Image (tube, rainbow, N blue to C red; front, side, top):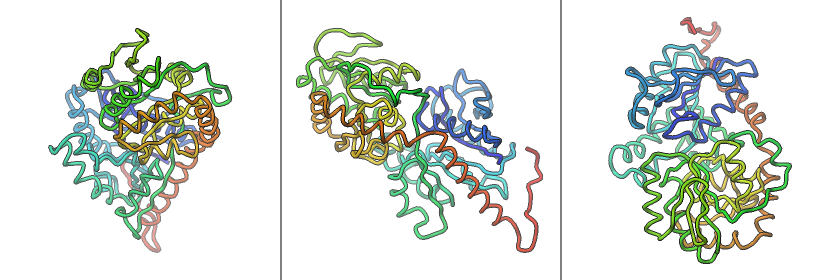
Length: 414
């Protein structure tokens, strides 16, 4: 197959660099190893090359004229516009759009005649757009457009059973649509971590992920820690992840409101409650942080399938998370998840105190999580995604073949 995968996010993108970018690389490099030709069209950003090859996959950065965009909004808009041009410039049998209402490519209308078209849904963000961005265009647009645009796709792949359940009532109910769930694995090579016992615990509650204050519930996290800290002497909160400078400023403001001291890097200062901003951690450092923490905090307002939750399970660490779609899929209460209501600092604080004070509970959850996570491997998930693509392509070719005639072929060059 010739596969064109369109996704704004990319590893190294300073504005996102999330789980969708990880999944795109891990799945597509395995498909390339199986003999498929894969091109990924993604957003441009300062310092990124116009193209490169990763694991046999050609990455093309879509930035439009004038060089890399200087801001996130400009980058999004230029990606959406440039991706439509890319659909005319390269050859493909199937095009997969990682759908986002913030930069829709409108692939069902733009793809070449006879090509198979599918959407990959990492998240449903429209319902949260107004809460995150207010009633302006950035909030109202996704809220209004997300569902109508997704209904234009006949084939949808999502990473979360919870998202699939949310979509079924309004996405082609009883109609011709095909909705498939294929989850995520770990975000980087954890080696034989799953077979090793955890390292010695340190008195650390860890947040590890993109610094998106609204989605990740970082306001709830800081308020909960401030309330719980007097009942957890010596336990610090470490926040690790990349994000915009405004996000870091917001974290500092919330910490100041809660009377928390904030330090940078690997600082260990004082005996009282403290928040340590670790910055973005690479694969080995992220694994080390997971292996030594008491538990991972994941107080998100919404998620798809957070890869970090699988990484925590693989490292034998519990997840104190919110009982929302995505988090309860990737960190179920039957495995390593200790789930509380979203946007509830008191409930999150109670969970912190309980987990921090109960080593036996942490060990039990960690062992359950390690066993549960073993079923998710990128090799197996890539094989399932290949089968999904083949089925979509076979149906598209059958639909494009006239009765009693030959299939019409696209004669334009690859």
